[in-house]
Image (cartoon, rainbow, N blue to C red; front, side, top):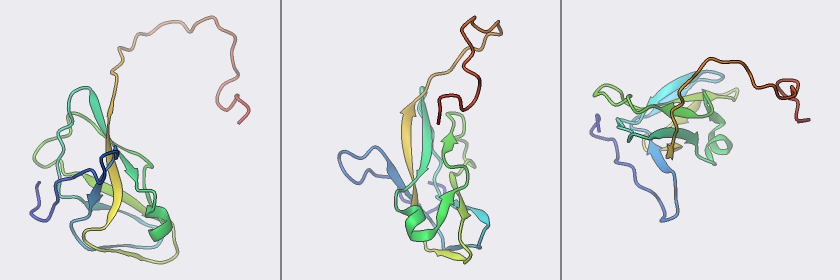
Length: 137
């Protein structure tokens, strides 16, 4: 914790994979704008994992807010004493949205990740699928 009002995350139920991230201050998100809100927490992500931030399922319906980048990615080396986790929010509505301290708009999920070794080479000689969007969707 880097702020005395920050709460150490907990899982709400035994089957939960995500933990909520409450806000530590009151803020207003102006209409059609984005802001970063504080959690007061620094996470040291274990080796072999990433911390991913997702909106809670009720966030958009209750507030009209979305996570600015849809999914936040917290790397293993983002854990210095000043690397506080912020949640970037975008107000999709025509009105200012007032957020109160303690509101839970995002959740964190630890997921295993692989690290690739990139090697330059020639593409496989498979038949081309035609590029982006070619599966008919």
